[in-house]
Amino acid sequence: MAPSAPSITSNMSARAITPRPSSYRHKSEKRGMTYNIMLVGQSGLGRRTFLNTLCEREVIPATEAPNPDTANVADPMRFDTYEVNLEEDGTRISLSVIDAAGFGDGLDNTSCFKQLQDYIEAQFDEVLVEESRIKRNRKYRDHRLHVLIYFIPPTGHSLRELDIELIRRLGEYVNIIPVIGRADSLTVDELQTFKHSVMRDIDYYKLPVYNFCWDESDTEALKDNREVMDFIPFSVVTCDEVLGNDYDLVRVRRYPWGTIEIDDDSQCDFVLLRYILLNSHIADLINYTEDVLYENYRTKKLEVGGFGEGEGDDEDGEGDDDEPSTSARKQE
Image (cartoon, rainbow, N blue to C red):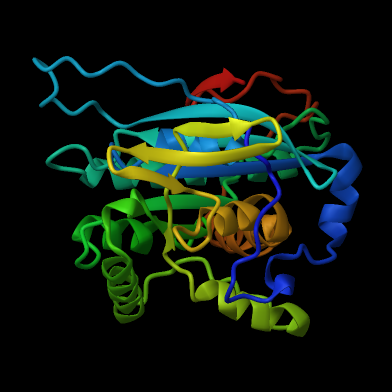
């Protein structure tokens, strides 16, 4: 297994990727954190290897090559959920990763946007129902999405209409962090040019990606978060092999011409992104989901009449302890 200690990005201060004191995180160190991530992107952009590299273990095994006779037929989008227990700097994390398999693979992808929005809203509605009970279910698990990792294909040009529409429609419901999948297919200069093009489109269309500087009252972290914003969209290269021995392990992606070390911050942003997701900014992502995104949704929902008839009136609050059936859940 590859070493989990992150390397500090050369052009950032050490403090930029140092976890800040957080009451949420402090309280969660003993009882553990519930944390939900969604992966969205077209097939072939490395979502499977991203999850395996993120968790430093094989969560999703390699799939067989598709049948060439049916390879031209796009499967409908589905939600596959993987549960992983992690520990980062003494904090236990109960990680739930939802993979939106099949997104953007068809000729007409308009239904995918509604499916994603309905899924995210359904998790908000579950919490709203639970809050309305007279006696709440003590075993209830919060499934609200804390971050959506959106994989942008490395076209080298700019955002596509598909990318723009997804961020525009879902940005008010979930923290969207855009990444460039398979960034190793671009040269260093091409990658920097592409990053600038993506950010130019985000600014021009006013797309609501996650703003790391949302808490301006935290002046100590504001400068660091501005530096983190400079890396958006994060360039991602994921691991398919570990080289070395027990004392010197290197995670790499092998090619006929050589290898790329994914833990080398001069070659990609994966180490920084992983540290942000699972360490330094995990509390910020959770707090923004609960205090801003959910509260905005809750206010709008109640203003227009709240629940339909029969919802939220289970007074005993015991409910059914089974997990929601919105996706196929797999325990790792």
